Image 1 (cartoon, helix red, strand yellow):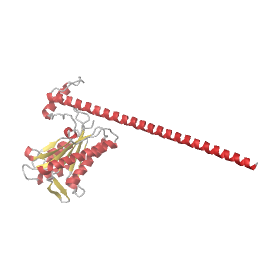
Image 2 (cartoon, one colour):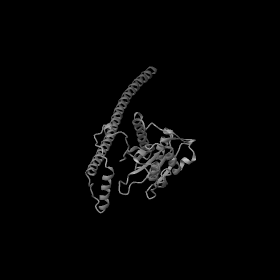
Image 3 (spheres, helix red, strand yellow):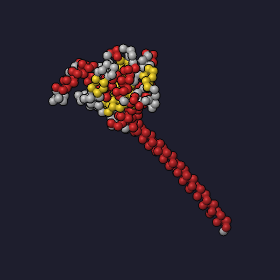
Image 4 (cartoon, one colour):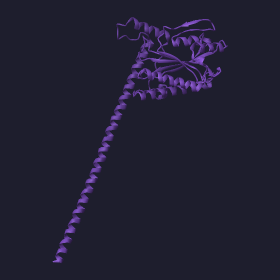
Length: 315
């Protein structure tokens, strides 16, 4: 079952973060932050692929990870500046690797077209201790437009409360449409919906947020019990989410069953209607044939009588 996930977060100095560190972590690279002299080495992190996409008119240096994010750090002067923005995407496990990559690139192109920013794309595999269907991507974007002359003005659409929610909703809808198009192209039966279960009119309880501490506890328990394939979650939230996921899967299974029965019933009704129409048509044709036959016999009888009278006259 495909799961929709798109979150938008800001990388802010106010929380002690830097764009260089964020880029190094997501790309699995070693980068030096020239602003504070810190080296961020994440070369041991498993990353499927990382690459930078920029507007067509962007200078060549913007495609270099170290130059791009160090330029961002040098440009931003405020101590609480938002130095980058991250889009975290769940990629459908039903798709093959090239299709997942193509889907991610398509969304990155949307961000470039919409905001004029540079996008640092990182494709990540499922975590070794997590759900093996959890292919995902991190798209780290500049918070400034990238122009032919370098970094331009700030993009404010996602910073202002009056427009941020509308922007995120639009992006989520676009991402859902892209996923569904890719699933349809791959002939996968699943579809996703960016709306909440409540907005969809579904009586399904959403899972609760685990958080890093509870997630770490569950993963440690899983590591320590590799020999036990029936291991159940050890935390309250973990057990609750497991139950909610099971209910959700059962709900989907039931909905698919209903859809299948409805489709088959529709086929049967259509076949019955066709048979009834054919039978009615056949009966109508038979009636016409009988009437035509009667008319022919009557006409032949009259013609024979007329010929007999003619012969009599001749004699």
